[in-house]
Image (cartoon, rainbow, N blue to C red):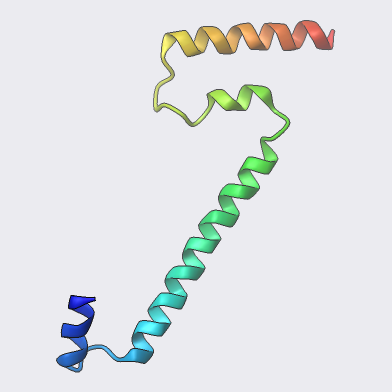
Length: 78
């Protein structure tokens, strides 16, 4: 708010500019939320997906747990 007031006092920013920026930011945030929710929905039925996107490199104990779950899922399908 202080910087906004400073820019407005210097006539470098108007109330309309602020409103336009706020709308643009809200739209960008909503787009990101929508994209994340869509990805979550697409992975909802995949139990193994819970191991993805957590670490840049999956720790050994999680790789082992993932392998165990995969084996159990395959045993139940067959």
